[in-house]
Length: 352
Image (cartoon, rainbow, N blue to C red; front, top):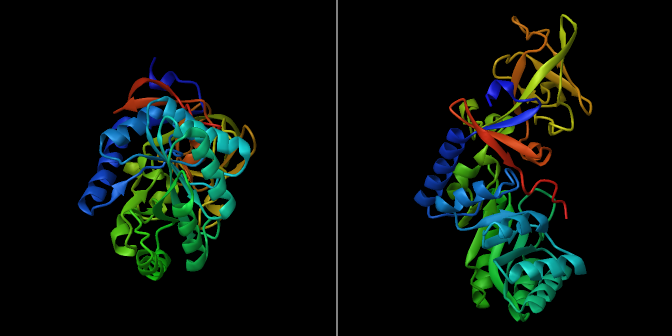
């Protein structure tokens, strides 16, 4: 099978670019004494997670239990779930995972801590705890030093749990302020945090300047996307995944329709605003993917000196690549333009 004959829409990943991206991040972490714990939510593919570990990653990060179960089934055995887990069903599944892999969980409340303790008791295993604090994302994470201290003390005092340290997202100047306030108090109580974990690809290569963390959690770096280019983390040549689409209609001279909409693309707008569209076309940089419906992408071609023709195949760099992986059953692997085969996205759709 030839790349040009693949049915569209299809996500295509260049493994040569993937390898370069992985090597670049691992080298940065090694140079600055950071343990790398990549987030698999970007690719959701066990073979790529195994490659990350083979290159030197400490282990992996998952956002959901379903992702962790897929990765553990593939032999990945050092897993952080960076997401609060609540409920008996999740405690049972976490316990089952703890029986076959080294598990850590993020907590930001006593109920999540209790859930982890139930899982550890059911598995007869020890589960590591990272207390999450908010660095400005305004989602999960405690917002005070006192709340973090209470959870750290409780983790140490709870059978089956082990206080391993702290985590946050994103790494920022606010992370440094929080750590400077809490670390002396933890150490005064004999709560030495072995792990200080920070996340976020956009500022990943500034982590050593931003905060005194010793572990880096990043996901998007493996593929990169339009947002990472806009943030200055990557260039277009560093974008490993392109969605290949076909122009299926040209209703007017200034408008084109492609065979991919919200079932294929992430809906995330660019930070600069919705007028920037939903993706970047390397071969038609002036084209703007202005609107998406479920199966249609509406192109504004008015700024294009040369316009794509009906039936032409186009490459698109998504605004946000992580949801794109979650929308497709499989991706096409290529290397230097040569089609290598399809790879199932084994952990896609794992929302539980």
